[in-house]
Length: 125
Image (cartoon, helix red, strand yellow):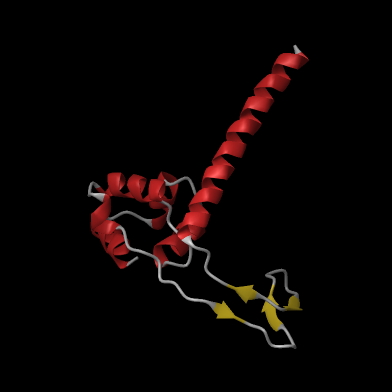
């Protein structure tokens, strides 16, 4: 996401500042900016507004490809607790339309949770 990174730096904005615009943490924003994590359309719009440019000027599609580790021995990774774990992982990219659908569903579920919380408050009264 070179266009986004370059424009952010030109404007003098930090990744931490940009992360707050899309309501995430700086490390997740960094992964989004590097292309490791998908930037959703609503996030593109917020970022473009903050940078005062049209979305089309900064939006880049994420690179796609599949990476698989199917060896029988598994792979070793550090779980950041000082322990090393061994496991088999298969990594693959999920099509954008599925991710968008899941994001919409998550949003719906969050709205339902809030509604149920309000309903619960009414019952407690």
